[in-house]
Image 1 (tube, rainbow, N blue to C red):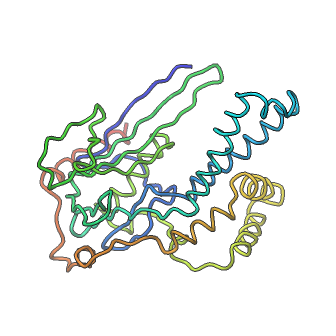
Image 2 (cartoon, rainbow, N blue to C red):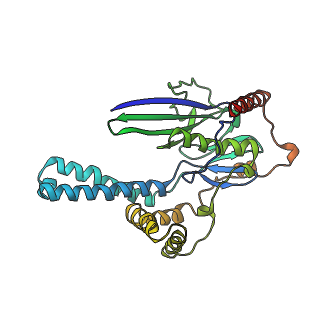
Image 3 (cartoon, rainbow, N blue to C red):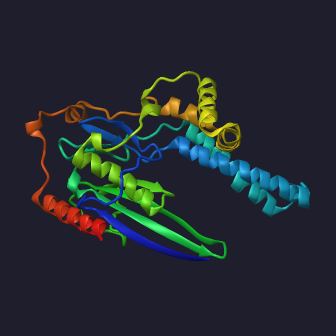
Length: 318
């Protein structure tokens, strides 16, 4: 198997990427005309993925046990390693995510053109100029006899404006020093999806909430009971896809593999409503400003955006 990697830097400066903004993974928790809360903490998605892997692993282990005998797992060290690594560890991780409280979000204030970044250990916040925010997407192509498997990640970095020490950057342009830089990291997204996720943030900051389509209903609406909501969703799926596809998608994949009932419970427990930023200073910072007090783009960014838009127009006309 051969691995090929490539990296594409998106910011600074936050110029248009040429892709449409696409909100995925529940990354946006709140959005209004003043600020948008973004987080890479998605416990429901993580539980759904791990639960799916756990169920498939158990099915494979049952098949192996049927072929080699159940004694293989309890009488051989390889079997015990498989049970511990692929069954016990995922179960413990799922239990942890059910009870673990999510971190505070990063708040993008478009009127002030600043980003409020919670410190890793709590306490006060960093107020980072928007135009200093870093972003890059990295793609991985794993080539094997089965074909090409694409994967990647989106990294967003927030340099500490008050850090006076020496900043050592890795080859990817980000610092590993948490006192110098904080990050949002979205793994397991191909570069195209990661770029579209970044474009949600960039478009909101530069053009406003009316130019992005973001659904935050899971974080703001008080729903009916979990089982009642699931049945309601199945009925909608049947009307949209038909009985057979609804059975496969909402029954086999959703309920059995991903455990959508548990995922819904986690969203209700921890993210409805999601965590908010605390303190009088940040609350004042989050208030709406009169239009005439809004911060403006720097001349450098204005020039860079005009050049990029002209480049995209030439590409579109070609």
